[in-house]
Length: 239
Ligand code: URA
Image (cartoon, rainbow, N blue to C red; front, side):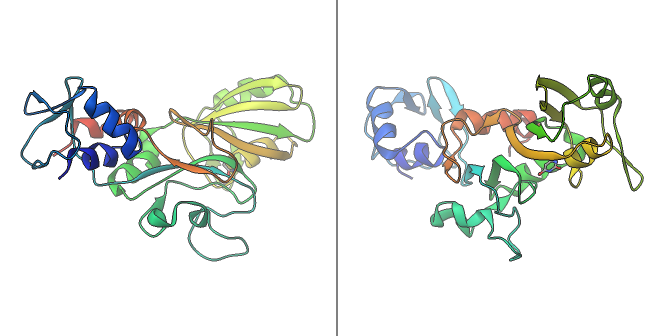
């Protein structure tokens, strides 16, 4: 494989950026600095380092999307189009959506064809934090901070895990969840006679939509993928 393709598959940036990084002497193959982007090597048997960090080759694609309203996060054709229609057509057929957001929820959502990472990120035992900015129809009583911290009975025999509630304006709060039950936030507030007017996911683990317009997507950076691997324990399990 060519060295520039290797780095660009690992989300180091555009081919142009990757060429610059190689030329600047950041990359070693078998401990020898290589400055020629077209350098050809065997990615399965040779060791590539970036500033002395060993790079594992990944054939997978990892995308972050700033989801708009009125798109669904499944591929089944319902009333609304799927968010998959919003990503680069080059990846749309390959990727699966990581978890779910309601059609009227906006914000960060990930897509990938790395099934192992997807399973880990959505597995209830993994407790990946997600932060939502919630706008309610009325002011939020202070006592909800404690109620959310205890876990909320949301009906149908379901009790949420402890959640963090930060009131950022009289009727606006940031809620941190470590799970993803059906309509979880809406049901938590409904339990206290409040209705959710706007729901926007700000963070999925360490990943935000900062810099993305609504409806826009981008590839995760190498550093972001590494953070997700660490969070899910997959960094220690690479073959
Ligand atoms: N909670 C909800 O109620 N809806 C979402 O989309 C996500 C969390």
